[in-house]
Amino acid sequence: MNAAAETPFRYRRLAYVALNVSDLARSTAYYRDLVGLAVSDAAATHTALRCSQDHHNMLLYPAAQPGLKRVGFELESRKDLEIARDYVAGLGLKIEEIATEELKTLRTVAGFRFHLPGSGLCLEYFVQMMQLAQPFTPTVTKIERLGHVVINVADFDLAMEWFTQKLGFKVSDFVPGFAAFLRAFPNPLHHSFAILTGSDNHLNHVNFMVKDIDDVGAAMNRMKKNEVEIVFGPGRHQPSESIFLYFLDPDRMTVEYSFGMETFPEHGAREARLLEPAPGTLDTWGSVPTPAFGKVGTIEGAAA
Image 1: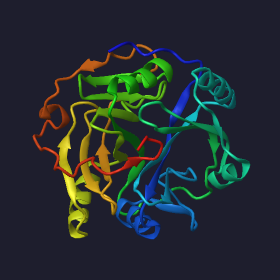
Image 2: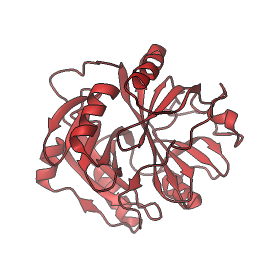
Image 3: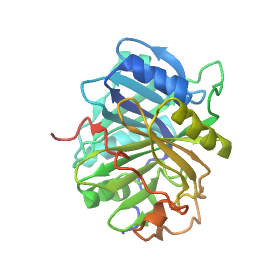
């Protein structure tokens, strides 16, 4: 595992995830009523949902195949965005500018997209999402934020090279031959993205961090009551130290609630730990995922 390379731009945070869903109305109701997001914009073409004062932290798009459409990262400033555009283009990647009309729909000032070699993952870098007048009001769960997105990749080493050596993500913990937990430097959260080895490229799960351990327990009973399949947990991860629960959405994509996460200072952070590739690393309480965990979710830009 090589040390992360520095980039000339800085991340602010993971801002949103865009998913493709087979039934927009059904998935909108699920993420609103059972997960606890608020709908900020609904149209035939998409639904925007939030768990903060942002206009959106999740976008749902109707599609033939459920999966991951893109992941949006906010950079610290307009200058960072301009530097990042030139930097990414210099890596030999095609820059996809976001049209003015779409920027208006997304309530963001400026941004661009690009696809990573290997996985085909679409990343969006942008600045300044509109903050809505009304604060986010929790309903069934006290969601704190969109926490992270995790994908499986067929070429783990290539994905690691792009994220750490070219895009400036730092490794917080590393499980050799299995997983890397990555933070969008200098954001302090243990990971806002992670990559897992796999036989193909697909979404593993989307995470929402909650404010209270009781939210995890209550969610387990709420999901059972509504016949939502639980696929892992409750338990505690060794990396990030969070308490977790994983369950399936209507398309059988995996969603996680987690409580608690290690944070890192910008300077003087600990070195990434080398963790054993063993079940106890994923859950110190001893549960194991079911076969349905992290299996459904085509990455839109991945080669067929």
